[in-house]
Image (tube, rainbow, N blue to C red; front, side):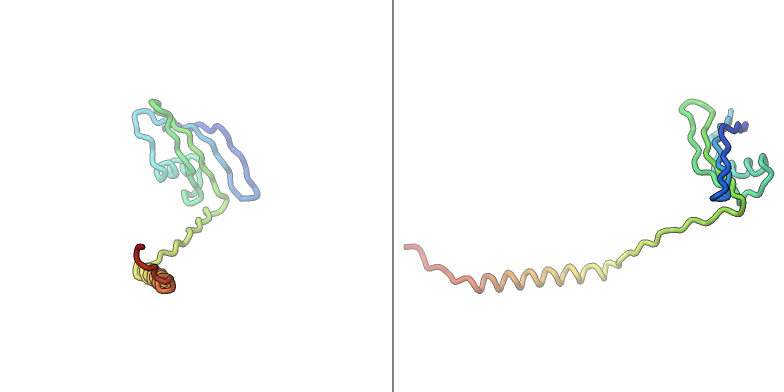
Length: 121
């Protein structure tokens, strides 16, 4: 596997180096992110925990891939996961049933209020 550096940018504010790479992987499948991180750690002589592979884009019909990676000065910060609140089915159903009952009661009241018209003349 051959790695060519296209672009290397220092980002002092975020304490990292941004890399754009061309990865030539003749005779092999496109490498997984974990395998690529180990290879990059060997090449740049650093710890694998400091590397992040953003994406690997393979070129159609070629044994090359474009890679965007980051080397953090310190260990890579952990990404925050969004918490999704899921209502249980039991909590959702009673609210709907209550609304249906209220609508039915309102309809009954309206029907009772209307006087009945006489028969046909």
